[in-house]
Structures are given as structure tokens and as C-alpha cells.
Image (tube, rainbow, N blue to C red; front, side, top):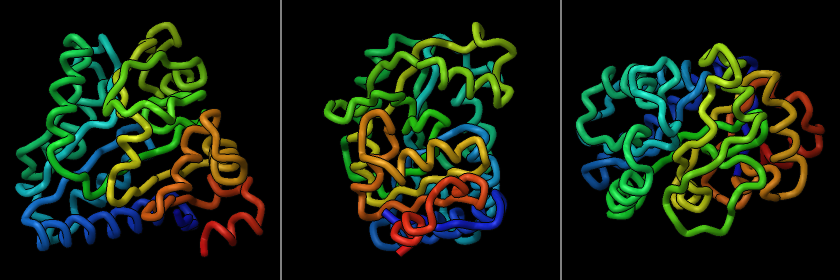
Length: 252
């Protein structure tokens, strides 16, 4: 894993998008297609905007898998991650093959269907974020580092649910669903390359715990340190609590 720090969210997002586009173009050139995992959330706004405008990416040859989704939330709800991906990625490109997690259907059926597809071939790149509680996908602490399943049903902790409310997706905490479908930690780590987009001061404590402390299920995204082809994109605010010696080591 390597960390890169940028002056602000916009420059962070542009650098991450440039790297992501390079990886997609190379995969398509080498194998005729690319397979990606896409994240959602406010941290992804600028990144996806830049990525969808990147030149030379043949999106008809890109296959996308969905990282996580609330259970019981309709796709028409503003907080729906299906809606997010349709609005900010799928409908802005010529992407034809994508597998969205339908939180309105029976969770086990959805898991079985998407698992069958994701296991057909390796994933070239996963785009992820890190939650204010350190979560990776919707794997809140203590995250399950051991399950070999591709997707699981998870109970969202209060810190995670408060983040969703704080980002403006829901009016009250009671409105935030308590359960979700989430890609597992092991499945995320199976991606050949991982790009983590982690801007803003509100993520600084999670960044410090995940990258300045132990690798532990209590700081789920700390597991990214075991993946050799991960790049974590921080801005000065999200990196502000990392000690200089730790940052220097992570940036090497």
C-alpha cells in the first residue's frame, strides 16, 4: 500500500481519476475488457466526475460491480447507492454491463446472483472510500476479516448511520436503514488494484487509526495495508493526524 497526499479534494480526485483511467485503458488494451468495483458516497463525487470525463476509456468494455447498498431502500430514494451509480457513473458513460445490488429484493437471492457473476473472472480495480468509523464498504468495526463470502448482510453501527445523516442523505437518524448488503473485506482485497479516495477533515481520525495504528477489525480499512497494489489518496485535511514519520513511511 502507498499513500499520496494532495492539497485539496479536487486535486486528489483528479490524480486518482487519472490513475484509474490509465488502469482501465491498459486492461482493455491487454484483455479486451475491464472489471471494476465502484463505491458511492460524497467522497466519490469529484473522482467520478473526473473519471467519466477521462479520454480514451471504452466504457462499453467495462463491467461494474456494486460495493454496497441499503436493505429496504427504494432505488428512487436520494440516498440509494443504485441511484448514485446510475446518475454519476453508468448514465454518464456507455457502460452496458453492471450488477447493482437491489436492496428491495430478498438479500440472499441478490447475494447469490451477484456472487455468481463477480467470481467469473478477476477484478482489475476497486474504487473504495473509508468511513468516519474506518469502515471498508459497509463492514463496520469489528469487521469480518475471515469470511470467504463475496457479499454479506451487515448491521450498520450508529457511527456509520450518523455519517450518512451528516452527509445530508437522510433527515433523521431513524430514517437511516439499519441493515445493508456489503461486499466483504476479502472480496475487496481480491481486486488486482485498489484506489481509495479519502478526503476531508472528518476522515482524519479514521485515517490515523487505520494507517497509523494496528491492522485490526476495529479499524477495518487498516487491512488495505496488506494489499501491495493499493494507493490511498488523501488531502491535507484527512492526513492531518498522521505523524510525519508514519506518513513518510506510507508514502515511500
